[in-house]
Image (tube, rainbow, N blue to C red; front, side):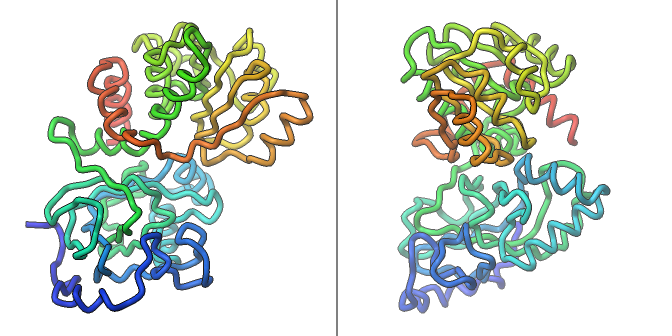
Length: 360
């Protein structure tokens, strides 16, 4: 059985929805303001009756993005207060979009209904992870998050979500635990884009990953090495994380510095690198990333805590000729690429499983 009340979706009404205006971008779900895409909207319509090209998902787990969860925890303190804050956001907005960070996360669930014109190739009963942000996904919560104590980024949840014609989702693999697969799929855009940029930089390029002990950071380290990097540096904030990255064998060098301290970062990294990948979930890392990068090099910002104004103006003020890229979380084939890295690299899998145990 699906973990879902089928009465929530009247499948006999699906045909009737075909006559209503439908946008593959989800414009028909925007309640306010008019004329914007769902990610920019203040409020979405989370009604679970699918339009012609939509898929309705019975939600099992929300995966809040790291920057959003950190901000909520810092603002609200206790887990109970964080739980209440998430409920209030979803109730008010019809989606999960942290009003401070602007970010959301993604989710795991089971396909409950499929509109007749859906191009996603999903069928009822498929267990999937969405690869689009919760900031643009119509969402309703029906259990009050009763199974979540507000501790940790993965949120047990009963409710419904809606995918559009241009949404992306991955069917969960059979060979990995759900929580582990969700953690990988949450950050799968980072290693895929790192692979592309490092290959473009040429054989033997040097790479530094800020937050190399985290989920996206550890996968990006492996992706950089496989793409032909000649020097791979992991920058982490503590000796404990440094020991974990060394034990996993993910980098040629592991250095310790606060990514928010530009001079400390520059000193720790030493010779500037060709590619810097920022995977930390705190604000204020922009200038350190610029200083760590060689003239003519590239910085990839994957953190939702990044201030792109600070990055651009900081680079200008430092007379730094660096290309700056926004990691948008989507590269064709990114889900399977990240899952294959996890399967092939015991060190990365050990880091992910350790994080899972710590948050269990």
